[in-house]
Image (cartoon, rainbow, N blue to C red):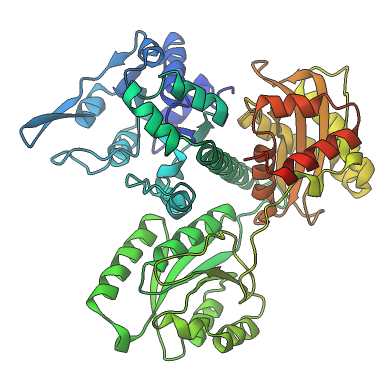
Length: 553
């Protein structure tokens, strides 16, 4: 994928920004090539005259990665004495004293050795940014705080090194480093990721195809969130009509038990997706305080603060009434609560209280997160807008892309720009009301494509845009190009181009459809098989069979 930020733009940002640019290379798992890509980009900048140094890199004894260090200057690490040993950590003071234009720092989720200046490496990076130095860093999606519960539930693995979402929001740009699960597993078997004695154990535990597919989906979602947010900010700054900041506000009502952390993480991601302010509220019940619940509450509120929430404590015998009164006073648009049947929270989630809450909140949306007990959540990640938990049904591509919306055997086009133009015209044939918005649709999609290419290594491109008042649900159209079309930079080729539009920001199906597309076209073989179909009907039938039979993940 091409760089989203040119050398000239980067230097301009370094010169004029109060805090220097942060670029994060995000991947689904170890071994996808994040460090390799970061070093590759660092060398490219150095060749163009930018002062680039390596603050800290973990080559993991991978020859290809070590070679990418090239001629880059490496700042010697600090030696931290610990239990009779010397631990090597980034020398943040030395980096700041050296004052390069760009510093490369690997593994931003890393926990520093005791005795270091900060507990976490991302805190060192904050110091470097404040000193006016641009930072390129790497991270896997499972280290993002707000997806912690989701990752643990999907993989069964507890991820202890985590980074607050508020730090990710500092990133000027996020670059996805993506490979298919099959390719990553092949790298593992070839010994390119871990030593020989760890390969079989890793393939049986973390590096299963199912885990890698789900983590890859999470990484793609995170990229979609980031690009969406950056695009909204840009359009707001340029005063583009209809693109003002979201006026929504999310209220997360938490109990004093371990369920609170899950609710907080869900609230954080919801607020981030719709660009909303968010509040975490606890309704105090003095008669039910215990030392354990007080400690759990303190930890939960600390997590909420780290994720950027405003914290409030409410009082009142009627918990539902206290929440509603506060929500109305603060113009809250959405409330998140958890459906457990334990302790004080049982009262708010009893049928009568939830029923009263739903009756009295007016236009405020109420989202119920089903929970089995105080400490165990139901596997359903989807939020329900009723008091009765709903089954989570994944969105399927074939729900939105019918046979008449598939242009098979498209020839005579060479670039993604040409293909996007053709697909928009085909979309207008189906939805004539979009004709008056054609130029705006084309510009929004092309702008996003210039900011971050939507070409994936599986041979599909997914140009898309959101925030259209003229539509109420996903509008999608697809082109099959047996000869392939080139990306804007000319360094990637797609054999399928999936274009879609989604309505006003906040509609959950935008990210669900993006994830469904990634699941369906999970490898190059699937993409090429579908792209070779001779008709829209044949392609539609094949996609339907794949989605129904579960081949997607």
